[in-house]
Image (cartoon, helix red, strand yellow):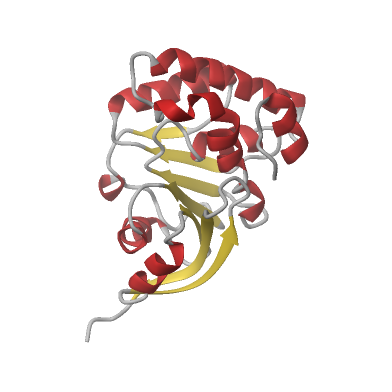
Length: 216
C-alpha cells in the first residue's frame, strides 16, 4: 500500500464510505485539539495520522472472523486500533466493541470522540489485567492490541477474554518472530503472521486456540 496521506487515499485503500471518512475526519480534528493538553500519540506521527494510525488500525477489519459478535481492544490509548475498528464497522451490524484503557484522560478523549462521531463502544477505565468481561458471550470474538507488551505477556493479558472461538489480532514489529518463539515456551496456539500494509517490517499475529501449557 502506498502512504495514506489523507481522507481520499484512505477511502480508496479501504473502500470506505463517505460517512466513515467523515467520522475519521472529525476524529482527526478532535485528536489534534486534545493532543495540545494530553499526550495521545507520539508528536512525530501527528502529520501522518491517516497512515500511522487510521490505516494501520483499519487493516485489522478484514482479518476478523465473519459475523464477529464481540471485539475487545486492550490498551486502546487514543483509540488505535479499537475505535477506528468501531468506526469502520458502524455502517453494518457492528460487534459489541470494548476499549480497555487505564489512563483516565485518554478514556475521556475516547468517550468524546465516540459521542461526536456517533459510534457505540464500551470504555473501561482500568488495566487489562483488572478488567472483567463475561467470556462466554459474544462469540466469535476478537481481542486486539497494538504496541502494548511483548507477546508472551500480551497473551497472558488476553487469555481471560479468549475462550474457544476467539481470534487474537496482535500488531507487532520486526521482532514478531522472535517474540513468537519466546511465547511458545508458555503458550500453545495456532498462528499466522500477516504482513502489515502500513509498516514494512510490521506483522499482525493472527492467533487462535490459545492455551497455557501445563507446568511440568
